[in-house]
Image (cartoon, rainbow, N blue to C red; front, top):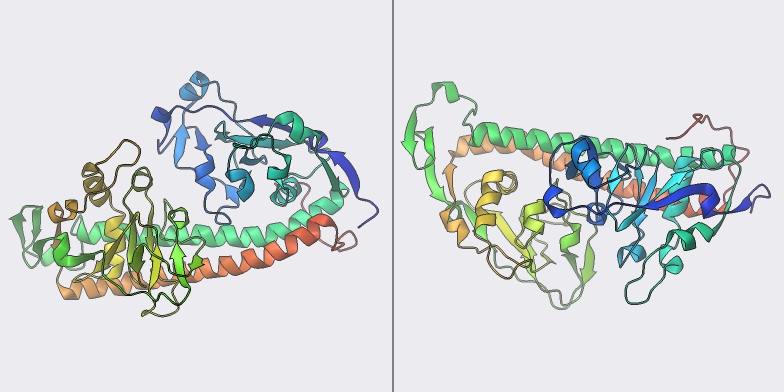
Length: 419
């Protein structure tokens, strides 16, 4: 341990305060003055380093009504209650943000601690060991503020933060590229198969149909004619197989998060090229949908949550199925069919018998797949790179934060402030 490392209380490092209660009727708004994040928005551990965007936004009028005080850019936020404490869900704010009352924020005292260094230090902190309560553990400001840390002087903190930030910046850049690629694919799907502005549409003849005006060469079919719902697949009972829990699905992209491996796995079964569609509330409404392309071979069978509906292409293509499952029309049709007890409603699969699509000719589908498959493959490749970067960063982080690796004498160009 370096001699220049000093012991200090958490309360001296930062200002701690909890988030704000947030009424359900204000959640889910796509735009506003402030992003609002909940613990559930941080489910995909390692896929969001800096919180820049959100699924929930509020305007200044609502902010004043609920008396919410935004946390400034550079704050580290984390869960303060329940099982999330054990999972150490910690995020760094890249803009002024409002957080819910199941979370807490640490606003750095910049005279003592570098904002990014504080984030990395808290990424290694055992919040559960500092919690109060047994049945439902929770953090209190007073207990957390009294916790003690060993930290180096500011120049060394900034060197450590700069080294680790280099990994995070690469990860974040890849995430931005992934988002752009997915948006490009979704826009192409809408142009070709919703607005019917496919290549050559200027010369196509259109005719009336139950879907409105569609090209004459296209046929109106129901989902079961074009898409196989819940394909039956054998799975080995004697081998460990990949298992995808609901928490591993993203609400905004095709990416699959952490994958488990289980023996005697049960649940939904799928292969590369299949789409996982959440069938239970609120996962469906929140947009949980994934595309499978991580399995080692196309013959490999994996399992997942029983709350997945697996969709497989029959007469379209895998990319079409995923992008259709992401569309508002498809999702709204499924949501309207939901039944069951409040809070546990599920999609009735008969709803797919009522959903119509315009089956394109094979030539159009082939061109669409040629355009979108490289985008899907690049998303998978970028995600794989991020996983490698995460592993390297996660091995390095505890050694830097503890002082095991001394960087004080390294010649590193660092900004005045690493935020």
